[in-house]
Amino acid sequence: MGATNRSPRLRLVPLDELEAEAKSGTSLSAGLPQPAEAQDADASSGRAGRVAPELDDELVARVRRSEAQAFELLYRRHAEFAFNLAVRIQGSAVDVEDVVHDAFLKARERLEDLRDSAAFRPWLGSIVVRLVRTRLRRRKLLAALGLTAPEPVEIETLASADADPEARALLAQVYALLQTLSADDRIAWTLRYVERHRLEAVSVMMNCSLATAKRRIARAQRFLNDHFVDPFSKSSP
Amino acid sequence: MTRASFPEIPPAALKNHAQPEHVERVWRRLELDVAGTPRSRAAWYWWAPVAAAGVFAVGVLVGARLQAPLAEVAAVAEPSSALPTPGAGPAVEPVVPSAERHEPPVQKHPRARRASSASPTAAETYTESYQPLGPAASEPAPVIDTAEWERLAESGDFHAAKQALDRSGGFERAAARASAGQLLVLADIARASGGREHATQALRRVLSSYVSAPEAPLAAWTLGNLLEQAGDRSGAAEAYATYRRLSPTGDFAEDAAARQVDAALSQGNLELGRRAMEEYAENFPKGRRLAELRKRLAALESPEGAAALEAPAEVSGSTASEPDEDDDSAEPRADAPATPPGSAREH
Image (cartoon, rainbow over all chains, first blue to last red; front, side, top):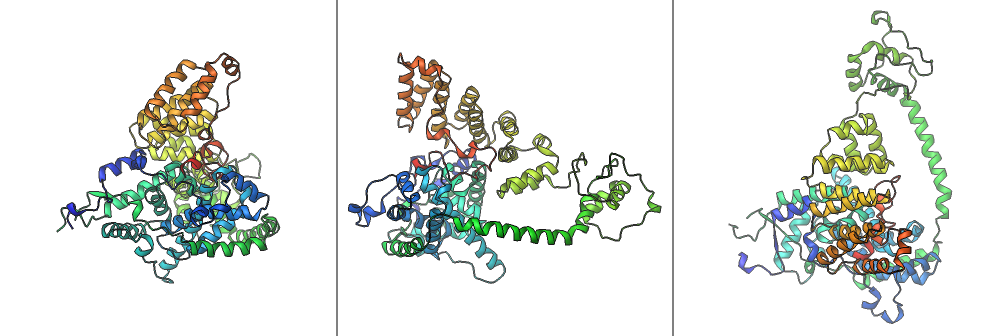
């Protein structure tokens, strides 16, 4: 496929631009949509009539008072975020329901630890990240011991049905490369460039300092820059 | 094929995994779990002490078994010829000529062997009357690789990183020859162990010695946060201005501009506040804190504002309480999920 046939959705970012961003901390995605806005999943699932437009901090306060309905509202509001986050940083949908289930259960149990009730979502994100990271490390260890096969990249799981072949090929290659990285680098890069969170949010979700988050992203970026091969470039044989 | 560019992943290409049936299925499981368990972690308080006691007991057993060889290593790692014998008062154990000594039959650690070759007599004398190393063991030998603290900090274990840093000669020694990236790590370690002064020092060093390094903007930003928390508002404003100079379109450029206004207003410097405000509005016409800061400036400019200037306002806005920097006694991000700055905004 020549460059002229390229899908308009697939913008090639010059390598030096990405490197400059990785070095300076400036954001290429500044003009892009920010991570998903808080959406009421109930509204999209036909339950809008039952859901009062309460803020997260109000719902968290109600869950702290052991109101079961508030927990359901909180779950439905953030389930989509948790599902997508888990699958995208993991690179597959294996056990994703378990991850989301455990994350919400832990969140409920540890709600007292959440100091800023309005920040429920990033806090939940940090729990999901921790669970997935543990899982990735365990899988890597078992694979190293020959006790299990490495998880294949499930492109059907990652790519939407409308994604064009270029986007699918891109996703497949990026995730295949990410699989070879350490869990921390892989998660940091995915949070930044797939989930499109800002550096601050990445460090919050990874429970590390900004400097550490930045180093991990930059390390993964360097690796991808070095190994990524664009199959649709003009210079393709 | 080329490796000249790296494509951006289009958001529309990503699948939405929260299918209603999945969401429902997980909720059904959660509902059962929630119905069966109280939300409190009362059970945790029961088994945690028991588990801690168990771990302690196992540790004691393992420690007892390993004590002899560990003693050898720890003792020989001290090359000082004037090493006092802990527990035996200030007197230094007399050096016994090697020919008269009984060589201990214990096999030495390779690293210990290197140390013992430097000053065998004192080291082995000390070995014979081993006591755990205490504060009397001055001028510790850098038996830990300098990169050790960096690796430990990288893995998030700041407590161990601080210990490794101390063993390798301490903060000053490491900072003297650290790269910009290492200085940021040192600042992280210092903040995690309550060493705000050291953290500030490391960050200032990045800005003075490595101002063109890619780490410099982050150092300026972090320095601004630290100074703000320490009450040094003019220093913080300067650091934020430095950040904006170094990285005008960086991730924190808007926050830095807002905090410059914040700092000026908190100092009661209306002139500077107005200028910073104009700059903020010009560069970030849709700034998240624009309305709030304009309101605050207007309030301070009003006749009643004089009273407000008498009592400096608290640092306002969620961006001012960055958990990463707030608690110097905690790990840099140990409490991060609790109060992430602006994270509610960006999600």
